Length: 261
Image (cartoon, rainbow, N blue to C red):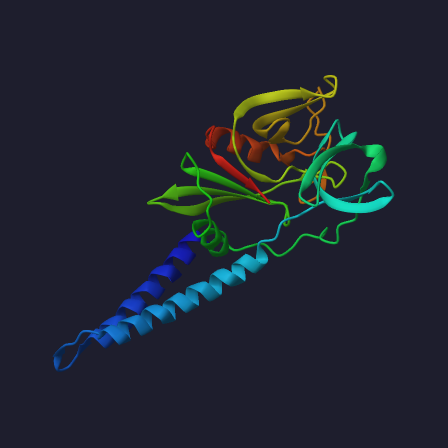
């Protein structure tokens, strides 16, 4: 597929080159575009680019979990930033103020954007990332698209990010949502034990406190406990198959940027 896309891109560039040659040269000898013609062509391609970029921007949507509280007799709604102890406390932002609330006072609201959406193409992913403010201290950048529950791994070459891997994943349930934002990979490990050593997860990458990218949870006798993908089912971490988690562990260096939207 990538070879086909590269072939199409090369063909397009050759066609553009031919058309430019047609305008620049004619049978009577060399002809240079005058300033107004050059600006007109530049404006034309700029308009095409801006139009395509705007289409992609419309497709890139955040997945925001919202909650309701009643404070001083007033009902307030805000975004859930993170939780503690699997939903015992919630960190909310309401009217630009953030505060922690016990779950007794918090009602997680239903989100209409629960069904998976059409995937972004490789060209759309690269167009968006390369024209955003995203950057990384390493040659790798991870984008976790919570809206589509997919992960995109990009690698930089000649100051341009190219999509090299697309992974299905599972994200946090609405009552224990995945923490959104731009972070860097701070630590890696081959495994960790969870909840009083009752299960084990492999190949973790840490990005914010206890929020990790890791494999499916396994029982201590190495049986998969939950292999669901493309669903919001975790306690906040981002889950992958063992092979995909191993790929991330082996290839993504510490200090790589991860954007979770």
